[in-house]
Each structure stands twice: as structure tokens, then as C-alpha cells.
Length: 227
Image (cartoon, rainbow, N blue to C red; front, side, top):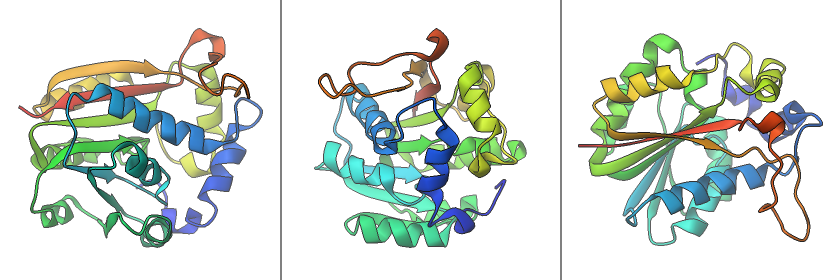
């Protein structure tokens, strides 16, 4: 990994808010719930279980329980301190520390859905395929993986990324590269969707009212299904 997230465990949310600067709403929970809702609306089935790979302090897990009330939620991360915070926030979620791909073998049951949000840009490029292959291995047949990554073509996203303390040493992934990773991992029905960038929230229309930064969306969602 490009940095030790144990050192950011207690300050991660603050660092993330600070990195956004004047460009968007500082309510980072909006971003988390938006992604989970995006996944929920994309699935044609109700997953029995969901794994969040790189769950951090559990912000996404919180909304997974809301939007997937009938699913068993799991989370894994390399940061033990982040997992302690996540467990205190979401006691019903099953969390595990992982440090290598072999740790994923502890999951005896395959997952119907795997969720990965802004994780791969923190993993060294020479390990990307290894991790994605391992995630493919623990996905159930016809299960779906959802990967959110920053859009490297959005100038505001690039500025935020460059000046973010939590992204020091990281590198953004380009769409063609992500598609190739999924293809090489044997995923089928690979899709790429550009997600919206929230710059402000209208108190009347809530976050259905969205302004796009220079008409380029800030996040890319990649999805693939196991054959």
C-alpha cells in the first residue's frame, strides 16, 4: 500500500473533508450512500452476502445495512485501527484484517457481491492483477464486483487527488487499464459508468439536484460478473 492507514484511522474523515477544499459538499456520507444506492439499483438480484474490500472505518458498511437489509455484510482491510472503528460503528458487520491475497481464502462461502471503493489506486500497480484475480476467486457464480475509482480526466478530481494527504504516493487508474484488469481476471459483462460529482446539496430537492464540474464526472464505476 502507498501509506499506512493506521496513522489516518482516527482522522481519515477529517482529512477527506479537508482534501475536498471549496469544490463540493463536505458531507462525505452523501458520497458513500450514493455509491451504495448505485450498486443497489444496478443489481437484478438480492445478494445473500456482500464483501467490501478495503472497508476502512466502515462508512460504506453503514449504508450497506440500510440498502441491503436482508444481506450479510462483510468488510476487510489492511488497517487494524480502521477496522476497530468500523466494528464499533457497525457491530452487526463481520470485519477481518487482511494483509495478502492468501488471507481471502479464510472466506469459505463465495460472495454474491463485492464492493471496492477507491482502493486500487492505493495498491502498487504490480499487485493489481493479483488482488483482482483473488477477488474473482471468492465471488459466487454470476456474482458481481463493483469498483469505484477516480476519473483521471476530471481536472478538479486531479487537483484534489494531487493535494490530498491520504492519496500521497497513490496513482489514479485510467479506464482502459481498469477494463484490461477485469478482462484478464476473467470477468464477463464488464461495464463502465461515469458517476456524478456532487458540488452542493439543495435543501429542497436534496441531492437529486447536481452540478457537474466542467461537465466531466468525477468517479468511474466498473462492474463485472463472474462467469
